[in-house]
Structures are given as structure tokens and as C-alpha cells.
Amino acid sequence: MTAPQRKNQVMLSAVQPSNKLTIGNYLGALKNWVHHQNDFDCWFFAVNLHAITVRQDPKELREQTYRAVATYIAAGIQPENATLFVQSQVPEHAELAWILNCYSYMGELSRMTQFKDKSQKAGENIPVGLFTYPVLMASDILLYDTDLVPVGADQKQHIELTRDLAIRMNNLYGEDLFKVPQPMIPPVGAKIMSLQEPTAKMSKSDPDPNASVFLSDSDDQIRKKIKRAVTDSGSEIADDDSKPGVKNLLTIQSAITGKSIAEIVTSYTGKQYGHLKGDTAELVVQAVSPLRNEADRLYQERQFLEQVLAQGAQKARERASQTLKRCYDRIGLLR
Ligand code: ATP
Ligand code: LTN
Image (tube, rainbow, N blue to C red; front, side, top):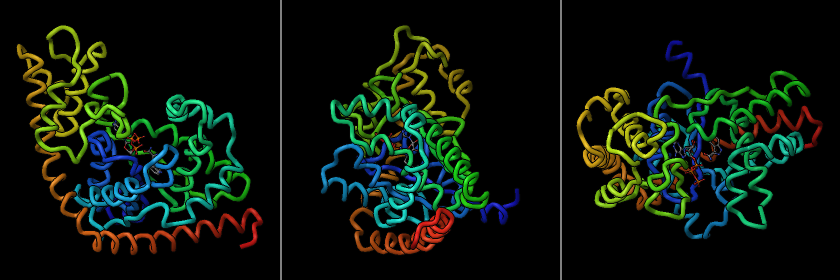
């Protein structure tokens, strides 16, 4: 495909401002956004309505939302190239979500892995929003006639549900109602694991701060966390499923440098876990340090961020309201 043709295609993605972003969010998603921002018509946002499916402190939520947008820009997203906005500033997302809820099945939502994980952690009173979370995500995607959604591996199931919903609605109301999107998942780095429990995904809302490297961590914090990372018994550095801690560090190195895991493993012949941890820590510091400094600077530039978001929300509403109108008309809802 030549570049001008691709520029007509829509790329869209988002992160929850539920805490500071982690290297998992960066290597699984954000890095790919930056890489493709010139090739596609890009829409990137902060999904604060998704974030409240888990209890959030209001002040923190507001600040993390600005912080997320500052991080997108610090990572290299250019507001002139991509539309940047906040989900709650575009009411069409919640409106379409209600409609899609009426066409989603309890059975298919019950099968979502993220719902199963998060509802277990929610205790006795599981918010309904946690259950219908993927329907709001489908609404986010379908409103913009999205072609591609760059995300980590954990979101593949939600994009499959989005596709099913789009196809279901198109069968009922006409093939051109919704564009059917595709996931874009990186070959390496799509699932960075927790540093403390390397069989579980690194997650920004993990209560153990040592489990994740945040993009706001100081160089010293990064070094300490990686040196404390849980590794496995034995001492051989190998790409082996029985050594998830070692495999995770190799994956982090590969996702940052672009070198293959096999090549990295060969370079450690005869070396110890300490070497692997030391090198990984330095690579992560090199990647995170400039990003953190720039995000810290932009985070203070509140006026600039607000201006970017106001422009973004206006553009997003123009696009989203067209799709929503089409949907209302087809269903027979008065507008
Ligand atoms: P939370 O802990 O609040 O649920 P999270 O860290 O899982 O958040 P999300 O906001 O759900 O992050 O995800 C944002 C993007 O980052 C998604 O594209 C998701 O697939 C990706 N992502 C999240 N965690 C990882 C990870 N550990 N490895 C690779 N990609 C990830
Ligand atoms: N569910 C996603 C966040 C998300 C998203 C989206 C990603 C909400 N809406 C639309 C891509 C496109 C997650 O990462 N947990």
C-alpha cells in the first residue's frame, strides 16, 4: 500500500488515565502509535469514562488525564498530525455505547477475560460498568470509521467483540453503517509481564508499585525495580516458558532495541542474571528518561494542553456526530 492511500485509513487508540502509564503501555501500544502517526489519519485519546469502572480519586483522575496526554506528546505524538482528545469531552461515545448495549449479549460479555479478572478483584459489588466496558470501547472505535487499532495483546478479545458488533449491526441496518476494524498488535512487547509476578500482565493499577516501571519513574527507581525483578531458579539465560521472569526481561530488551530475542540470548552466553538485569535497567532508563523529562515539562503547560484538547474534542465531535446521526437514522430514533 502506498502512503497516500494509507493516510485515508483511520488509526485509533486510547489508554485509561487510571494511573501513570507503564512501560507495558508504552511498548505494547504507544510506541506503535508514534511509529505510524504519519501513515494514517490518527485519533488518540484518554478514556476517562473507562477509568471510572474502577473507583478513582477525582483529583487524581483529572491530573492523570492531563498527564496521559502530556505523555502521548512527550512520546512523540504530534498534535498537528494526530487528533488528541479526552473521551468525556465527546458525549457521542456514551450515547453510542447505550445503543450498542442494546445489541450486545450477556453471554459474549461474560466471556471477556478482562471482565473476569477485574470483577474478581472488585469484591462483592461488581459495577455494571465493568461488565459493559467493552461496549463503550466498541463505541469509541466505531464512531470514527476506524480501520486499525494499535493495542497490546490483552485487548484483542475486545476488538473481536467490536468486529462482531459492527457486523451484527450492519446485517440489521445496512452494510455501510459501521466500518469493521482490525487490531494491530506488535510482534514483540505486546504483553510485558509484572516484574514481581512474571506470569501476570504488568498493569498500571497493580497495587504493588514494584511490579511496574512507570514512565514517570526516576532513573534510580527504574534501576531498583529492575534489579529487584523476580527471576527464576537456575542461572542460565534462555528464552524458555519455564523462566517467565528472564523471558520478560529479554522481551523488554527486544522491544526497546529491535534486536531479536535469539540474538540477545546469544550475547549472554556464560553470563549471569545480574548482567541481564543491569543491561535491561540501563536500556529502560535510556528509553524512559527523555520521555519522562518532556512529559514533566508538558504536564506543567496546562494552557497548551487545554488548547490541544479543545481542538481535538471539536474535531472528534464533528466526526463522531456524523456516525451517531447515521446510526440514529437507521434505527429509527428521532434526533
Ligand atoms: P489498568 O491496570 O488500569 O487496567 P493497563 O495498564 O492494563 O491499565 P490500559 O489502559 O488498559 O492499561 O491499556 C492501554 C494500552 O496498553 C492497551 O493498548 C493495552 O493493550 C496496552 N497494555 C497494557 N498493559 C500492557 C502490557 N503489560 N504489555 C503490553 N501492552 C499493554
Ligand atoms: N480497553 C482499552 C482502552 C480503550 C481503547 C479504546 C483502546 C478504550 N477504548 C479504543 C483502543 C481503542 C484498554 O487498553 N484497556
